[in-house]
Structure formats: structure tokens, C-alpha cells
Length: 132
Image (cartoon, rainbow, N blue to C red; front, side, top):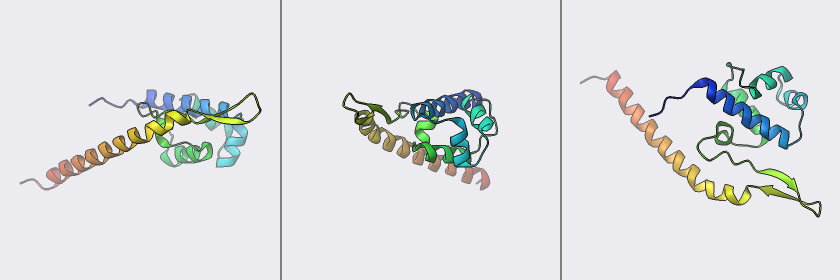
């Protein structure tokens, strides 16, 4: 199993959040005001220089941008953002919508694997806690 390194993960999260914020044409100050933090913190998160990033703050950001944790974390290929783009007629379409539908099955598979790994981990903890 591959070891998870925190600094590259923080960089990936920051890049993904920066990409979605720019695609939505939002400024740091408005995002920060909406979720109740300062804009320098958003800047540090986007630059991968905020080691104190907690799950509740990441969830607030995901909810603000209407993205999943999988998208913020770039779990495998689940980092397809449904960004809007103007068509020639002025209407909008979702980029990646057709791709996102195919990833639903992939996400279900990841969730199933996650459930299995949690069960395996619990069995190991049970063995450690209750040696025979």
C-alpha cells in the first residue's frame, strides 16, 4: 500500500480548490466571507501552505463549491469538475457531465473498497485489543 504524504496531498487539494474557484470566477474574499474565515487562509490552502487544514473546513469549502470530497482530494480519476462554460448561443453547459456519469460507478467501487478496508482494519484492532 502506498504511503500518504501530507504535503503533496495539501498541494493537490489547494490546486483543485483554486481551479474550481477560478472557474466559478469567485474572489478569495467572497469565498472566505461565505464560509466564515479570512481570505489569507483560503490563499494558504490554495497554495498548499496550510498544514492545519481540518476536515470540517474542507467540507465547508466543498459545500460552498458544490463539489465532493473525492473531487477535492483527487481520488484517482474522480477529480472531474462539472464546470460551466458559455455556448455560442449564450446558454451554459456542464463540462465533464457526460464523463461524471461514468465515474459514479467508479466511486461506488471506491466506496465498496473503503468499506472492506475499514472492516479489515477493525479486525486488526480487535486482534490487538483482544490477544488470544
